[in-house]
Amino acid sequence: MKKISVLTALGMLMIAPWGMAQTIYDGAKLTGKDLNGTARFVGMGGAMGALGGDISTMGTNPAGIGLYRSNDVMTSFGLSLYGNESQYLGKKFNSDLTKGDFNNIGFVFSSKIGNETPLRFVNFGFNYYKAKSFNNNMRMEGNLGLYSQTYLMASQAAGIEKWGDSPYTDNGIGWLSILGADAGLIRDITIHDKTGGVNNIPYTYKNEQGVDVQYKDVDGNPLYISPGHFEGMLDNGYANFHSEERGGIDQYDFNVSFNFNDRVYLGLTLGAYSVDYNKYTFYGEDYGNDEKYNLQSWNRIKGSGFDVKFGAIIRPFEYSPFRVGLAIHTPIFYSLDYKTSAQVISDVMDVVTGEIKGYDVKSWDNLPGKGDMILPFDFQTPWTYNVSLGYTVGKSLALGAEYEYQDYSSMKFKDTEGNSSAYEFENSTTSMLKGVSTVRLGLEYKVIPQFAFRAGYNYSTAAFHQDAFKDLAINSIQTDTDFANSKSMSNYTLGIGYRGSMFYADLAYKYSTYKENFYPFVNGFTDEDGNTVIGSPEATKVTNTRSQVLFTVGMRF
Image (cartoon, rainbow, N blue to C red):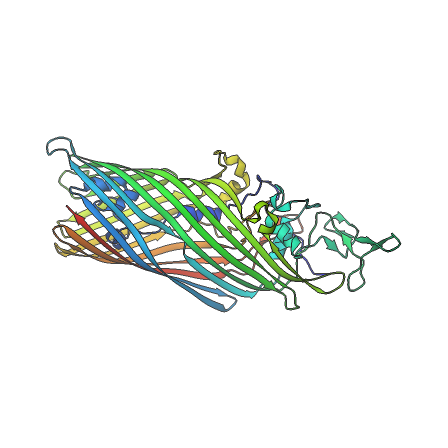
């Protein structure tokens, strides 16, 4: 028989509603945004919340549109090179990806009210931009030591004594457990008459005389059934993982803003969002004795959402170019669909005959309609708080600084009726997240009135605690067990711009980089005191980079 470790199901204490799938890692992807927009905005590191006068500011501080005194129409295009370098136990892999982007398009319609009235301008604007790109490739491989994904499968199956007629749609059964059982990767068969405190029963069959005879393994040991207690595969498997992530979040902002006495600017932006996130994962273990398996998972999150943003820019001193900006964004209220399917291909030993037996288990073969599982859910991102400073020196130099805060631990998963209690388990895991602070710095220097140079820096702190992990509910349908704890991100930007009497063009370069610790899964072990201890293979050290070139053209009239 195979050597096993005693496991405790990580999420077994709370049984969520049927088929729960979302985790804090899905929520973090939906919450974060990229530094993107017009080339001028990106070139200044996004630090334009108090300076205003750029279409992209309606997504950070809506009052920035209030500084317009003319109409504006523009569009932006880009090219991005994504890089991923991973290192696990001395093995290094590089996965690169190049993508062209249609980054944004927008306009501002400026309406002058008067020179003497307190209300000087009322402006209206619209902007579409790519708020988030999910594009990423990842690969790792190496020896797992004492860990195995099959141990996680066994822990997910803990307590299940009967699978029933339709386990893939059963409220109390997760897909990892049933896929593992159907593919022979976990078993409730043991050579012991007692396992993990479970009193086992003989594993028998009726012979030709109708007498119950106990099965024996290939070594002649009698076999038993251990109800509700499952065993995984071998130690020291060789892991092979790769994943592909695609898609993004499109943001559509509709803005109205006001200019009072050229000193106070107020703005409101209604944001609409469209999400399309696709992830494919391949994970396999090879035990070097002709036993091996691979698990493939296809996942998609798609849907829409909305938020409201309020902003103000104030010149506290009448004749000073110094400005202060304040903004607050409501949570984004998403209505989403989670779509998933999985396949396991395995070669495992039959414990009775000792022969290698092959399995090919597809989730869609076990669902009504022979298709993917689709589950709707709602998601609420955190509130966003923003404060910014701006200062100009004549008409040649502009300086911007900005601070933004989001408490990622306040995100909420809900059912389609808006009840967060339906996701009690998932919401209980958000304590593994923390508040994220973003600092933006930027400058623009005009060599002559028509030409400008720009530079910026953008820094965001990590969203995950160091000991965060993907904690799957025992009845989760999610089968991609991998996760990565991202660290802080830095964006470095440069840009140039031309301004004519009507026509303008801007070019920007952005280099983004962040590190993360990647894990293909976690295992939960019960220690001597009965406590659950979380363990995992050694972290894969990952460095992600993105080089992006942006080009914006527009007209002001």
